[in-house]
Length: 504
Image (tube, rainbow, N blue to C red; front, side, top):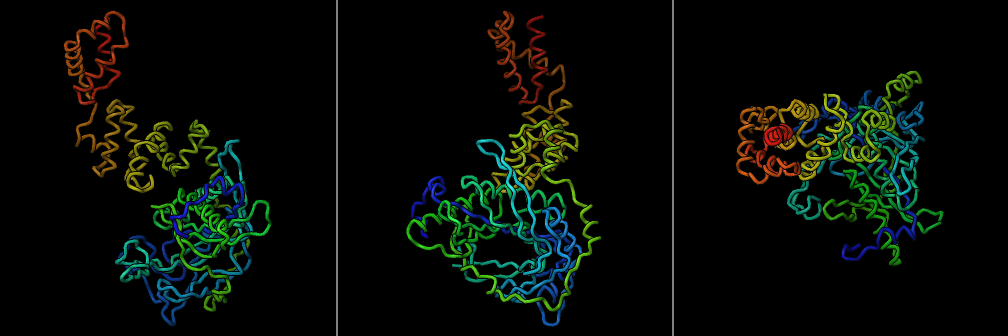
């Protein structure tokens, strides 16, 4: 489908079609070692330095199941209200990719460890907040593939590249794939529900402590399945699968675009091709990947080198006892404790800053101050750099220290913004930035008094207005003093000195 063809508006499409979605989310588990061997899972190592005969698929090497990965899978399943299988097994999923060294992936097929669950998400609508229950088809264990780096082309993809490099450090890292049942909601809300689901799932995974779920690092990846059917029809349309969408905003945008694109194809009398598609963040479009295989194309068969996994009911119940407070309940509790409105809480959650705000408050800041910084200067800088707020370069403890300096009178708001700017630029801690930039508030009373006297002398007409009772003119003198002190005076104290001199 050429991008030159104008797409119908989203509103036009949903007036004629019902979208049906399915989300497949892969989560890299935060285990120390890989799924079936003892190699490290640490991020950022030199290519091909965290490999062994097992994760490289050498003949004669045998896999051994990572117990912590199984525990994490069970806890995820329990948190998603799934049934935990009493007996499940691994299978070989056969396909050829250069980044899959064995030419098969150890996964689970007909016997997942968790199945038939649900979770709920909340979406703000014109009629207020609405809660949607999302059915979970299954959550199963598998291993990740390696990583291909295509060199020489303009896009970083294989098309147009001169050669490819392979890094197998990621091969064998434990994954949990969470698959929803078909999601059918009010068509106008479909993209927002998709985003809300992935948002809720990310918060749940983080609360469980089984993964940092940082989408920008590939620790959590969403494949969005979308199909269209005529309004009121019962037969599902042909689906496409947009692969590896790596931000919450992009999940919503990708679903919206694919709904519009598929309608364009159907309006032209053509058929939707069941295929994978690539999401392009820069253009907001999807492009074809490969024709999507069916399950039989993978030639699944039981993994002969691994015994079945049979979690005892006692083990499962012990793990149930480790589950944290559900994210929705935690949000409601924190919102009440912080005194935030529904809109304020939604903004914090949508910015991915809930945990950061909570940690900042725990470090001593007040709720309003914590929210102000994370959703203001820090969010703006992170957005300019194209990273999440957690990657901005400042910690909750440092934000709390800035607030402490303000409350102690060592900084005013203007100077505090410069301190935050310096920390974000890598100039050190808040105290180091204050010292290096000379940003402390001028607290020397004699220096402030001298600056006030100079301002009064320079602006006698303004001084006369104040003596005559026009207190609105005080701002001009305050501005003059702040300019003279390079913004480092305490504006409240400056006002007090001006009033004392001119109205006593």
